[in-house]
Length: 255
Image (cartoon, rainbow, N blue to C red; front, side, top):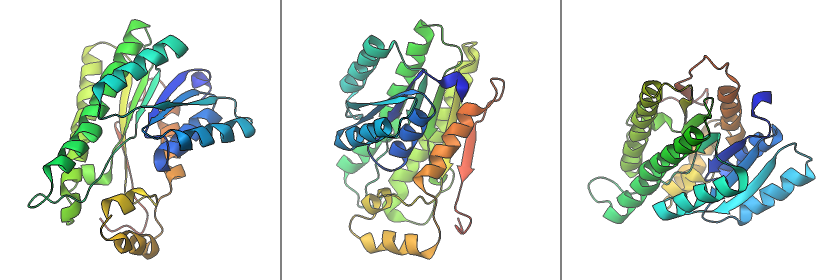
């Protein structure tokens, strides 16, 4: 990770869970991390922890609603003004609502699409443009995907969310192909976790929180730090190595 010291990483959805763990880890490794979310209070607390911990890098909170393109563009303009640009983009932010295909609310579907697919794509595009205008040829775009981006499980509440994660799988491979055609060495990777013990499951099962509780009690799930470790592994790969996707499950997870 020495090659990334002092360089700028954007981590979306950095207030809690996986995003917070990734932001903290990159700051520990000496990066200048811009952590964005709609609610930045928790990122501010995490930034203070990084200072107290004597991390060699920094964490800067930024308030941004990723469902609003204008806010994303303003964030990238601010990063350019304050930190010159983005070298690493971690598209972690994602939403899941229990909206089945047969009876779900269109508003929930649209919000998931806006954040999980469109917001991710806008961030990836703007990160690439930031790298291109500064002749950064070794940047990295990492999309936090899901195992359900590779298989449809029997869970009606999560079927539309699963569709957005299938899109992330396709978008990451599309990015890889376009980056090759652009004759750049910028890399694109997605990381696809299975069950992770965070508050995310409680949002998906908001009407049946006991399902999330039972899940976490039934097996030893992944932790947010496990995904942060995978991000560091991806960023630590030699420049000639393209890691397309890391699929990681708890050992005890069946599907």
